[in-house]
Structures are given as C-alpha cells and as structure tokens.
Length: 388
Ligand SMILES: *Cc1c(COP(=O)(O)O)cnc(C)c1O
Image 1 (spheres, rainbow, N blue to C red):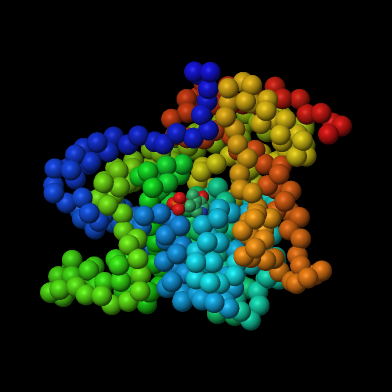
Image 2: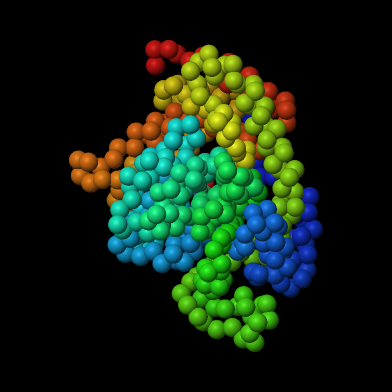
C-alpha cells in the first residue's frame, strides 16, 4: 500500500545539502575537518563532555573497551536486552559478556541482577538507556563504585536525556557512546561518538581513534609531525558524514519536539484502551524521562503481541518488535553467559517476557497528527482474545 505508515524515516535537516556541497567543493572530505569540529562542539554543548566523532556507536563501544584495557580472562556485565554491539566490543577483546536481567517497567538493566553478575573478573559494566529512559544509575553506581568498576553508557537512544537525578545521559559513566545510524533521532547515515567523561582517557582516545597516531595534536599545532604511538584503528568518520550530522544537530530541538509530539499522541490516545486490555504502555509514571526515541507497548501474552503486529500490518501500519535477547542468541550462548554456573545459571525470565511481549509503534519526526491518529485508531481496533 502506498499510504503505509513506515516504522522509521530519517529526518531531513535544512542545512544538509549546503553542508555536503561545501565539503565536496573544499578538497577536504577526509576526517577531522571543519564539520567534524562543528558537530563535536555541538555535541559538547548538548552533553557537557568532550565528544569524539566515530564511524558508529559500535566503534565507540570498541574504543571504550580498548581504553579500559579489557582483555582475555576479563568479564563485562551488560543487559541481555540490547543490541549486539555492546557484546561484540567485549568479545573483540577476548573477554566474556555476562548478561543481566531487566526491569520490566523500563526495559533497562536491573541493578540487582547486575549486582548478582559481578565477579572478581568483572572489569566493566555496560548499561543502555532503553528508549532514552534513564537507567537507575545511582543504584548501578552503588554496586560498581565500591568495587572500582567503570561504567560504559551505551547512549544510542538517549542523546539530550537526563538521569533521574538530573545528570546528562552519556556523561555519568567513564564513557558514553552515541549512534547516528539513520534509525536514530539524529543521523548521518552511519556514525557515532564517544563521550570521554574522564580527562585521563582523552589523549589516548584521540590516538586510538586515528590509526594509533597523534594526528589530533598535530592538527591543533601542538607538534610539528605526527607518528605512530599506540594500538588503535580508523574510527573517524569522513567530513561528508560530519556535514550531515552537523546540520542534523543544528535542528536537534525541532527533531526532539516533533518526536515528543508523536510520543505524547500515542500515550494519550492509547491509555484507556491499554488499561481496559491489560496492556502496559511505556509511560512517564515515576517521573521517568525519555528522549522520544521509541514508544513501546507490552501485551499480556506473546500470542497477543503477534496478533497486534499482524493486525497493524493489515492496516498498512508498520510496527515492530525489538532485540532478540543476547543470552539466547546463537553467539550469546557460545561466547557469553548469565550469572552463576551450571544448574545455578541465571534464567533471565523478565528479559524473555519483555522481548516476546513487546510492540514498538512507528515514531519519527515527520509523522503527521493525522498519521498518529490513524496508528492510535489502528491499535484500538485490535481485540485481544482472552483465551490466548
Ligand atoms: C543502534 C544501536 C547501536 C549500534 O549503533 P551503530 O551506530 O549502528 O553502531 C548500539 N546500541 C544500541 C542500543 C543501539 O540502539
């Protein structure tokens, strides 16, 4: 159907084409030019932390693992309900991801399950703010601080968000990682950033990002030539990506306001239906904050979830489920584990339930109010079968 409501559509920022033309006309399209500087400065203003642009959030997570010197024999605790990136950054260093369960009110890592997964080999904890709803970082810090374990915040959903106690998401851990994949609120096709929240990591982060060289210092005029200093890779995006990102970040407030408009339309339009049908909505009860990255529903059963997705498909509305839990994925079973061993290995029941009962509705800045109403009406026209 031509009038299908797409699940996600990248935002078009007014300055994109002009910025791209400026790069292509400038004879400087490789990384760390004027648009990288401008986009990094905008990120710094938004977050308060030094931000290094990367080619992806995955690469920012890899950089964080390198900087934390994670290696064979080490473990990193992370949520099972997240994208594969957090786990592959760990296994790339020869370490073991240990998967924790979630809090069903948010989809975020549960601090108690996290605490149970800590061992003497735990070298870091990665958290992810699902939908930009903040993880209870004070509770996580109560576990990690006494043990001196650093936190990495996978903040792919949470740019511009705040913790429950008012700190900026991505800036509480040693590192925060951002994604500018074209399914995220702000995008440049593929891209990311590493927020370096502890000054002692900054110089080495610059070196690892730029093929192990001190080119960043050279570009600042601090040295007269740059040389190979350390390990690393090529984690810097081209100026073409930075040019689009810079234009998107300039429109950040407009993007967020429009996404919030859609989010609030769903929340208000679906509340009575959800209450009648035993459906839980992502909500801002308990003063939960979010960045309008996504809007989720929890159906009472997996069959009801599958039924709603199929019903919406017949109406031309593209809804989706989300992550297949890492602990039950083929690689997760082979390369990772849950807390405990053998017969005592933790079963992540809440993660399995949350993942299998989840529906996400279309959410992007360009959705019209009429489309939002059509989605709301579509969901409300779904009748749950009480026998399933
Ligand atoms: C999108 C996403 C990633 C991966 O981002 P890339 O920029 O594509 O590498 C990682 N973690 C989470 C939570 C994501 O949503």
